Amino acid sequence: MKRQKSKPYLWDYDYDKLKKTEEGRIKILERMINYGPGKEKIKLSLVKKYWDKLNLNPKAQRLLELLIWKKPQSSPKNKKLFWPV
Image 1 (cartoon, rainbow, N blue to C red):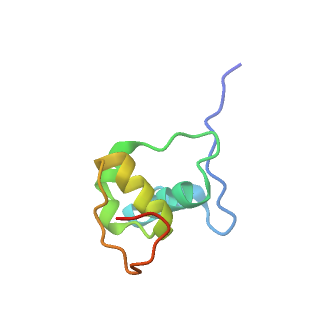
Image 2: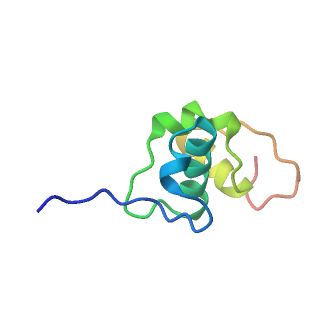
């Protein structure tokens, strides 16, 4: 029995149509990061490639910056953050 690859859960978009365009692939990647990837893995190369185009949760974005580049890349808009910069 061949195992099917699971798709990220997109309740308001058609996954097959989205993956055909670059904007669609960016939207799928955003959803995977912001809401969880499900059973699929997020490719680090795609995150790095589309980093400047991703619209992410600010706290998740800072965490990913620390994990990927080992330092925060963006400057915080609010100086009173939970963790020091």
